[in-house]
Image (cartoon, each protein chain N blue to C red):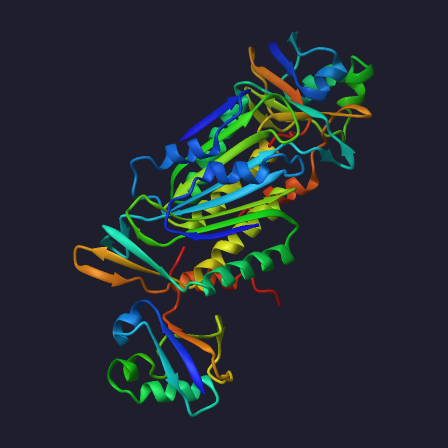
Length: 151
Length: 151
Length: 83
Length: 83
């Protein structure tokens, strides 16, 4: 398990290669990379700055990964989230999940992303031609996280 | 869109970097790598050989990608499937899907994998200590594909 | 009609042949299967009703009542297991 | 009790402060919020009932009736928007 918050970029291929190095029990690695877009809510975005809550961020991400491990039989999980100023096209977040079978890997990867979006203390401020603005939380992200709740 | 059947390995990082090169409209890239395991159905597996139906394979994969494009707003899709003899730990298949938003990218990536497993003409033969054996199709794969059917 | 037959994976091994050209007096996939079953042995066994195999005509999987045309490429193979 | 307060993102900018130490005569998060609202201006506006903000005590998000202990780290921030 690897959880990192950093300003530098990351290398998807290297992270996934590190997960599988020397192992022959992994059958599936599902991964996700979130990227900064040049457009959001109808405005051009020229850059964004990611702020976070040091200490709580790492705790929140660890808890998400623990929750995923409790729900699915996972072999390894890597979460990397960037902070600081990013430009359109820059990678923001990486989640990679290794499992014996693909169903678990896909489900856990999407679960971690959905809860990261609603529970990890990161905030985005976008620079647009109309000025800087803090991104508002989305109801669609709450809905995505809520669908994992069990009765 | 890139669909390739090859005996050589592939580089996840390079494939995903190629998808996003020079673009600032992609917000999400979901990817999947399937790997050869050292164990299947309770037996040790020392190697496997993948056979396919040249011509039909490419058609079947193109159709899966077309179906995914028809269902979701995708920006790019890459599918690479290996053939020939592979050892435990070797990557078998790569599916990567780029979209503006993560929901579409995750759904389309899993959709393509589920149908690839049931509709693309590849067959695995495993070498085990008890001899060589053709892998049997799994009901769980049929069930995974069936859940995408719409009423 | 003349058909270009292809067999894959376990069925290729069981039949001992990967491809052949076959002259068929018939119109559908079911007619073709009856001719192949009549060869007996592994053919009768593997292509018996209820066995899990797939038939593709010109590289698309079809049902037994699918029509055949002269020169068609017909492939018979087990359920797929890639990925 | 003495609390170590942290404010993040839009609320940090609105309040014009990122952290402060605060002496509270009270027992719960609700008591703390009442004290902050009484500062008026952006405090009253942003922390009004019905506004979307979160409170974390010692780095875990809590409800308004959560108890506070001397020396706690209390953070107030907008709904998160990372990823």
